[in-house]
Length: 254
View 1: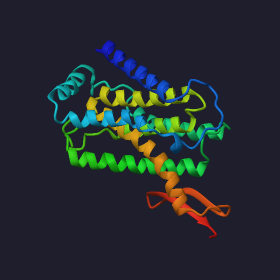
View 2: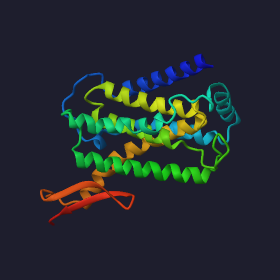
View 3: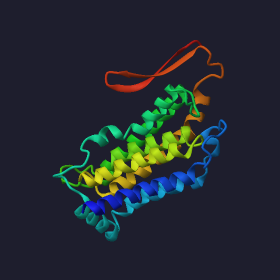
View 4: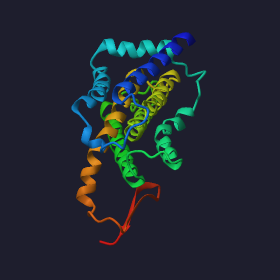
């Protein structure tokens, strides 16, 4: 069983690396790129759409559902959980890497305000989608405790963060994308390995996370142009938290 799980983990890592190599250029260093929204294509949404579709089809295809049960029987282990609770922190690591890299002088595509607004929008899209699907699809979790097992929120968060890192740094080096997606793949595997989710739960979560990040980069420039004046020299924008509610603080003269 341990050998089989290791092979599954490696396959997911290689799959993430292969996908990263296809969506990011091979050059290790690139000139400052154009805005992310300007070079998004319909083809870039094929993978997240396919991942989400796989999960939805698992409600109607017995063969896909049997694959869930097979993986759960052969790879999941709730008694001897691997790296237990590490995934609660690691799911945010690719996003944290974006801010760490900027702190150490390695600049991404966008400034602090723009990338933070984009990330907040992506999180909002992801959380809304996962909650709607959890309530609407009503699949029992793997232990039968709730009806909100599908899709995996951890997987969605991790792959959103991976795509966020890729959008900001993927044009500088392919290894930023590879690292982010490998971390996200590890989260997905751990959620299955530790008997928290079925395979289709984490696959769908991955698709939601990737799509949410891509859509945020598409939506934010439009919102920015519509809501903020062209002259923003006296405007301060920063994340804020009040009464346990995340938001954005905007101050300035208009």
